[in-house]
Length: 253
Image 1: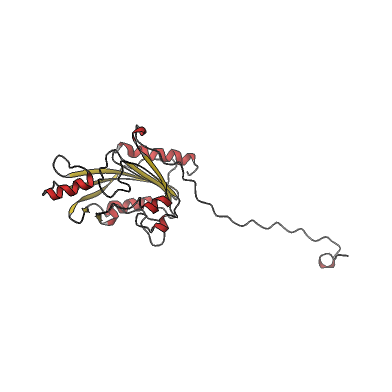
Image 2: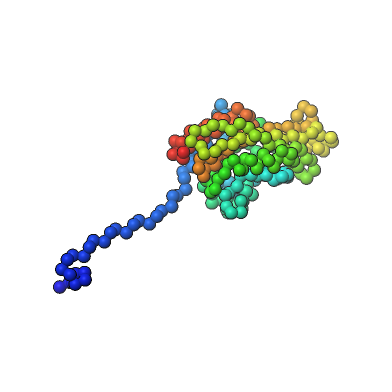
């Protein structure tokens, strides 16, 4: 005869079911959040890449032969790790593990070494980053680059200035920030200088120099960052709106 608990004839008390182990949330589904902002998308050849491909192909890297001072003029998005690693210069192995997607058109400077014409281009990405602080990143881009420079082939230096734009209002977003970036070279003093400018930008302006303006928007939904860059100011709000609507539909808000 089997004995009961403590030698009693009373049945043993029922044991409570063990508590399930805590589970950590998996990566968010960030696919399908990027949309071509141009009014006529049929004119664009568009490429999409996840961050494994972004890292392997160096798609966030600065074009070869270009250097910026200070570096934060263009390199202010941080991974959120203890080291404050910049996204653009993170080791490929580290960047490739990030949950994210990038989209750009063939006219964009993404992945190009030279001829960065910037005509009718767009490029944007969405990525999950720990400790995301869009305002801090934007403030760094502005405060450190009120009088920056860009140098081509180590020979020709121009101005690079970031200024603040009115940030787009995106329902559900935890933070937004917008930047106007002006890049300008004085009229070429020698034919050799002109050839350097044409190598990188395709053609000279009528005055023999070169000036380009780019417009950047950053939107945060918690720890998800949207970063978009485009050559025409009218698309800044449209890019942010498109992302915000799709992010809300995905339940990121």
